[in-house]
Image (cartoon, rainbow, N blue to C red; front, top):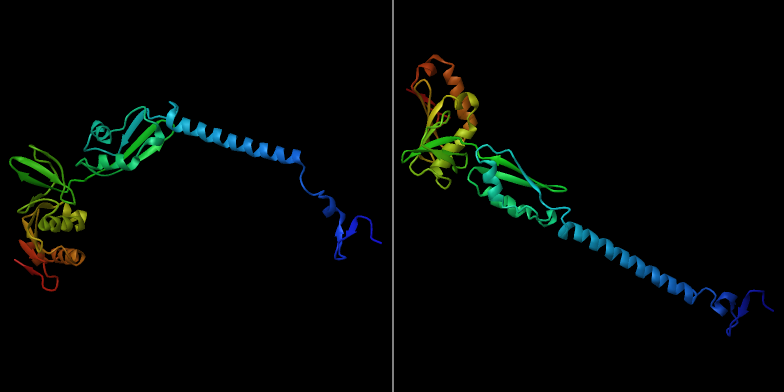
Length: 257
């Protein structure tokens, strides 16, 4: 005798009656419905992806209609836009922002740039200008150099407020130029405002000429903080105020003349 709903196998084991008639297997109609659901979902996903792709890349809905430029004073907006080379009507998704940034940064007036998409139709270029730090006179023209020794701008009129740089071969690859510019970037404002000329016969021989007919022999660009502290302290003394030359090239032995 067996209980209702069970059957005995050939080995004498009792098995549930559901295993005998396969009642747990999905019906053919259910399997067909499941297949149609999979097909429908797949087609829906393909349609959505196709629509999104068309909107981003093929339609006129999300294309460049305006280019904004901010942050630049040395280069004009037209210069930046021309260098960027962004074609109006180009789908926003196709913009290569890295390539555009590289083209803008090739302008000599530009130190760095950022290119941003502002959906749905605006590209914004944020420029960081190079800052002129010194001027060099060559061939009747005044060249303004930034902290890297790069010529930012030039013209026949002498720019106001910039000290003269005197070196043999001014430029971004000249060690003497870079040493002089490093000293200038380390100077506090109170000394920078008094500076009229910086001379560097070599990277180890930087000399500053300040207002009041004061010459400071700075030496190499290293140990600027110590040299500034010594110079400030000496200028508070009577000997320092009377000196015409102060040598801080070796902070261990400061001399005056």
